[in-house]
Each structure stands twice: as structure tokens, then as C-alpha cells.
Image (cartoon, rainbow, N blue to C red):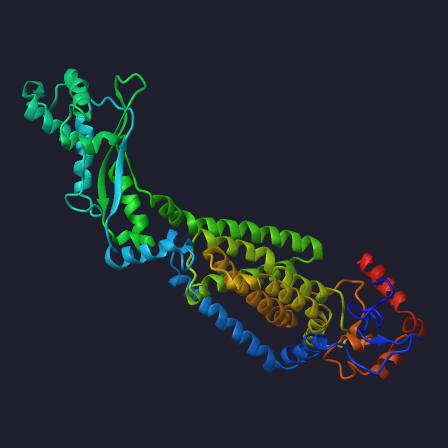
Length: 475
């Protein structure tokens, strides 16, 4: 690099200032930059920024992406299923297919739990909770099963003398004595065996410390995230005593409840950090806002296009949404930074911004596209994975790369050509270096380049590199 050699052709010297090859004697060759540099650094700026029509087309396509993204956000569904983690062809997949084909829509088993309450005196507390569940719209009719009800029925039938008819309960002083007999596998009735696992005794066996009673939730919440959250909240709101409802899917339903707020918070925090750091690094608030805005566009489009590529909002895809903030910033911040490093004194402010935006694409466009290409190659093996996590990551990363490149390499230069900020005070005039301006008529004309450069610079690419580094240090 110190000698200006090409990466893959070390026998060829390349000047950093023009991108043109130089001979051993220091003279310029009659040629242009490589194919990628010509396409991204020369052809694309002329296509996108060379005419007003090109700018309008980029803006319209960007608006289309954002429109689809905003609409898709309204159609986005939250869902998570453990079966997605089962690889195709796995032995358990056949069992899952049978269950889903013939037993889908089944109700969901759940329980209502009680802690260390005074059970002999608070028998009504357990019964009231069951009555509330029976009247709840999310609970399957006649699905409740309680050890307390069966225990009281057994006492009424077998030990009527210990049943308080007026209070409608077992005599408190005889409660635990009869319960030990009832809950025994040797002395208790067969109807009590199903409840043995639903009661927990203290370490010395003198009292109950926890119990549970079962019920079933209707199958509708299993397939709709909004109904799932409503079901969970309604059950919790209905049971306001010492008891609380619980079912295994509540773990995932709880994530549905907080997912939108968590995404908003995390993306906002990450975006704020990007704005602060970008603003400090390039010393321009306006560009910091524009870069942050492009990142916001990337996230909106990713969320909106997720339903189109078969990805639902859950704890796996959310990771990629937050990662997109850090990954997509590279696709725009380099273009924004290059925009500040040159001025164009042509008497027309709008035209000057367009020339500077073209320079930014010429300077950093090929490197930014290379970064996106290398990232895509790195995640490409995930396309052949059978794991749910890897397939989701591949689809999400493809969107990060595509939308990051589009908004950073295509839209941002167009926006800068209209509302870009002023350059640094020490930035050189682009008119003095037509070889760096893809929109200049003499761009790529080596004869003009030789005339525009001092002889010392022509014969010494290393000195040109040192001068550029010194200038950047001053900035």
C-alpha cells in the first residue's frame, strides 16, 4: 500500500488520487479504472445524479419501498412456535404432522396457583377463583378441575359430621386430618389420585404451602398474538386475589405484549447513539440527521417487507432489526463524509451540491458496494441451512444489505444534491480535479489529467498520498 500497488496485482502501481495505473517511469497509462469502479464510481453517478429524471426515479422508487414498508408494518404479525426449530426430515416432524392434521385447534391446559394461604379458613377463596374462571370467555366450559371441590364432596359423603352445612365448608379443625387421608394413594378414593400432584405440603407435613387447580383455555389464542395477549391479561385481571393463572405459552405471550415497546426503545437508543457518534465524527449535525434518517428508512422497510418473505415478528427476527442499525450505518456514513471533503465553486449552489454528491459516489461508492457484497457472501451459506434461526438471519441480512445499499448509495446522494450542507473550510475545489468528478466532461481524459496535475505529483504517487493524509489531518 505504501508503494501504491494494486491489491491483487502487486506488479501494477495505482495512484490513490486518480485511480489510474502508472508505469515504472512514473508516467500515466492510457486507461480507465477497473470495471467495478467505472460502474459504481462513474456510470452510476451520471445515471442517478446527471439528470433531474434520474433523481426523480430514485426518489419515486424510495417512496415505493417506504410505502410498502409502512403498509407492511400494519400487516406484521407476532408469532413464535417451537415447531419451527425442528429441522425438515427429523423423526419428530411426523408426529407433529399427525397432531396438527387431526388434533389442531385443541384447547390449552392451564392452572390457577395458590400460595401459602390459610386453606382451612379460606376454602371459599379457592372456590371463588374457580367460579370466576367458569364465567370467563377464554375458558372452555366445564373444563375446570379442582382438588378442593372433589375434597369437599368426599367429606360430605364420607364424613358428614365434619361438614359445616351453614358455612358450606369442611370444619377447619378437621380439614388437614381428612385431607391427608383423601390425598393418600392407599387410603384415599380413586377420584383423589388425579389431585395428588396438585397440592404441596410443608417440610413437616403440617400445612399446605401451594396448590393448583386446572382449567382449559380455548384454542383461538394459540394462533393470534393479539388474542393471546388479551387472553392472558383478562385472566390476570379477573383473578385479583392471592391466586394467579399460568400456562406454558404465557412465556411467549408475554414477549408479544412487550415486543413493540422493546423494539421501539432499542432502535431509538441505537439510533440516538448513531446520531451522536456520526455527528461527532464528521462534525456536522445536518449530515448526522440525514444518516440517522436513512437508517430509520432501512428498519421501516425491513419490518414492512417481513410478511412478504415469510418472516414473523418474534424474538429471533427482532435481533436483526436492532442489528440493522449498526450494519446499515456503514452504507451511508462514508458517502456523507466524502460529501464534506470537497467544494465546487461553480456559481450555482444546487449544481455544486450535485457535483459534490457525484464525487462522494466516485470516492466511496465502490468501497461501500464492496462492503455490501462481502457481507452478502459471508451470509450466503446460511441460505442452505435447515435451522429456523439461520434461515431467518439470512433473509433479514439480505434485506439489511439491499435496503442499506439502496438508501445509502442511491437515495442519500440524491438528497445531498438538494439539501446537502456546506463543505469543510479546508476542502479543495473539485473544479481543479476533473478526474475526481464523474459529471465533468473531462472525467477519464488522461491528457487533461496530466495537464491538471503538477509534474511532481505525476511522477510521485506516494507524495500525493502523503499530501492527502496531511490534508485530512488538518480537517
